[in-house]
Length: 129
Length: 280
Image (cartoon, rainbow over all chains, first blue to last red; front, top):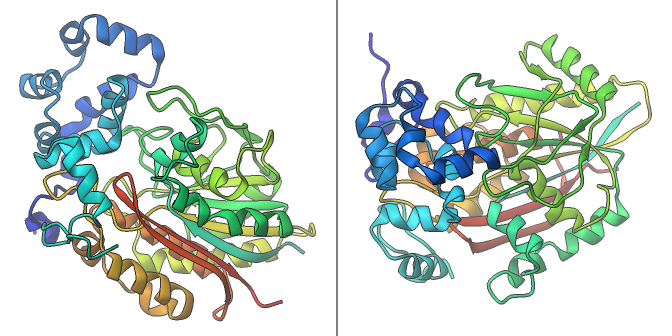
């Protein structure tokens, strides 16, 4: 019998479960290599050639090249692995999170200062302040 | 006999570590957060333990997708701060307590909690940011640290109740160690936050406040919160809060709350903090 996944229907949320681990194994493993400065340099010098060293799908490679974090997540990427990628770009968790919401980083940062987003997805509009 | 005297919990947001490392703690954005830990730094000076069992999660640093241990205890003599993609944090090497750690591993496994024993690993912001928040920027950390890593990255993490019961087992293990040691246990991570997808930026102050209150005064109830509720109400990364239950389980049923703090936001995250003492 299939496992129940009651968390699969929460809007705007992807849960990194064992199926996603399998799907994203090579994508996330590529990200881990960016924890070494020499690898970061090599990746930056020729991203496509570096990505081709990994058994990732073409779709995963294109999502990395486009820095499309929502796409990477849907293809099995996990945010803590992808963090090595945006750190290589000199970007923060807040930059990456904002990019996935479709907001500018400035608008997202202001939303956080106003108390963030409620579980229903709508901004709290200062309710948490 | 070794004894657990107190517990603490705090968020471990990487941007907090960066704010300290880059000298930004007095900026208006960060100042209220560090203000909330001023009490804690003094309390640490007045109550410096010999050892802290530091419950945290590794963020794809020591553990890739090659090996995903649910519970892992660091038994090494020292642990090096990791390069997470932006170079290692400029913080002291973390000194372990191999004797106590090995004792805890053996005792806890014999109480039916199957820990993974780790004799070599680097530690990331999940472990070093709490040390920074509680100790500032010393040349060396003022106590030994036993890193205790919990998988909360790959779903499912252990249940809240499993964590709470593990805390009790850790306490029994500490109390069966012959040396006289003052031991604290810290649970880190949380509070409400979601770092991915269109729902990123989730903050649920009401959930956080109820969790803080419940953890102090009604932990048996909090231990029963199901995973789905954490994800729905505190965000996909808010589920890190199960780690606080390991800390709470290792303390007395009735504790003295000496400090409580909550602040929104630190980057993407609600910062929560507790210091709890076992009655003397």
